[in-house]
Image (cartoon, rainbow, N blue to C red):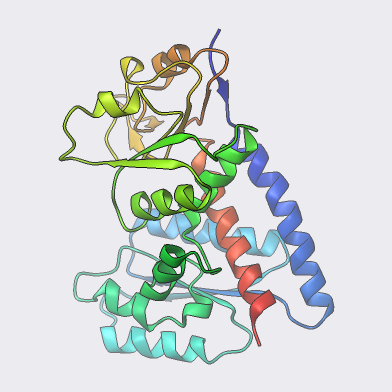
Length: 285
């Protein structure tokens, strides 16, 4: 028997229903949660992501503002727009879609966002809150991964978790969130010697490196939970993750669990963006 599949679509649907209820309660008190999305340039993938975010807001009672700007937009002009949105009481979350054109420094733009409206959870202030265990807005993808793990019913506390990847957007915050949940955490990366040695000891494996077949069947132990954050394409152009899915699913056995790609982590990222926006609206003065 193979491992059960963790259905990110179903979990996302359930969480969005709760988010819609919270948004409705705020709207009844005259505070409709508002998200501003800024898109600079004409990257096709970014345009799709932005449309999905705006549509999700409309479906769940949030107000959204989409600003599209040409790739020639000056960095100073983008910073001016962020400053204006910081001051807008109708906007509770600000998201600047990445990647930005090369002449714009993403770190400078992220730093310009009011931390109370940093619904991506990428700012230094948000990272500091996570690092020190203070409440705040969490990076959407890692937070979604935690929700997926929790949905299996397997406790995180006391378990050994291996995170493969050390990016500021997924790997590092993922490790910190697992630590907050009282897991013992090992972070692996491109310089890790004998990756399989670490993953075979893990109760939970989260892989986010953007490379197909990073985790293979001989690298996991039966009964583990595997969360695949990767988005790649196989030889036929189909979406796939960082995990060699079917062989790994078989190796995990009936006591294991695994997220598919697509349909696993992906739906959760936008869901947690909505949750962050509602949380920011609830906390707004």
